[in-house]
Length: 266
Length: 207
Image (tube, rainbow over all chains, first blue to last red; front, top):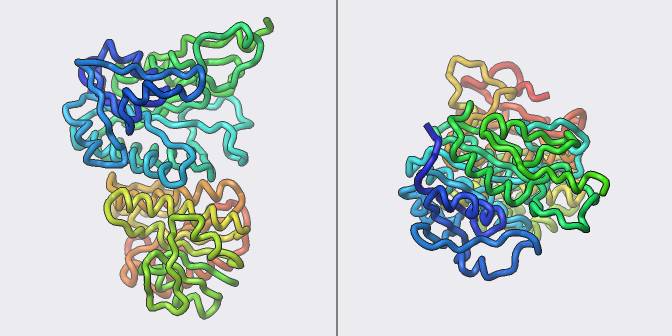
């Protein structure tokens, strides 16, 4: 049984806003080993990724903060020792070398270390690029479900994360590791400011708060139908373009924030 | 036709660079410093800045370094396969090359039971090891870049040289792939096996 109701959880790439959201939602339920390439104190002191994005809280004991270079297998392995579940929210977007190193080799290192340490559940994360400018990017489709194969095309960020996803899938199918992959497109704060009312919302959108809470559901969900499962982690919106129903069905998670104020006339 | 063989320092690449010269104007490049091939040039295959100028005037590429990547350590093997293929194909697209042949490995299907008749319509079944995953990484990059419609990528899965796949069959398969007219899908996958479990019918049933 891969369900993780308590115990220790390691976060990789926790210095970003998705990691910050995960820390907020998990810190009272698990003992966290929070890792990033930079010290978490340094991350927390830096400006946010964008003005309304969350900054990670620096946790004290019993939690642990650790500097880990995800491209270094020995460091990843050490970070997985004694751990019950792993969450990989690491990402590098535009760099032509590091994108492959972090998004693909990093995913390999995490999956391999999970298997080596007997970790049964890994939550992997990645983007769903909804508009890549080619005819197979689903941009013109509706009622798109989470089980579609992604088509990243030639986009560096999209394709390097896509390769990392495939690597975790192979580990899941071959090594008994259960991998849940959460995919995202557009994040925003829960709070809708008065000046935002009626401004519209991207058809694949998730609040930071819901983003964090999904990890709690991911860890606690019962055994998955298959060792590798993809999930759209987004609000169910009336556009009916992207459907997060699978997350509700298998994880019991659904977004609390539906952003009605954004898509209704003030 | 001017054809760049990328990875001419690898066993299949060296063979093809030598043999294709009878019909094509071959530009042989690889990561290693030297080679016995006439006109061979060392190029950093992981850097667009290094590869772009070499592809000027080239009409097609044969990428032999993705399915059989060199690398010191697991990360390097994966990186050479994936990033190397990404660099080669995006560089090719950038200069307007419309045809690529990507060499991969029949090993991706080796773990299906021996009694199965396995053709290119079967899903790849790599092991959770860098060396086994590497050719899949190259294939996925090739398939995705082909999906943009800028370049036709014909992927040929080969067996071990002169055991499962003879040199003559490999050269002929690459020659056919280079000269075939572009039609239908931009990603085409075929098996090139001269003997053994994958040798049945013609060069696979890709398209």
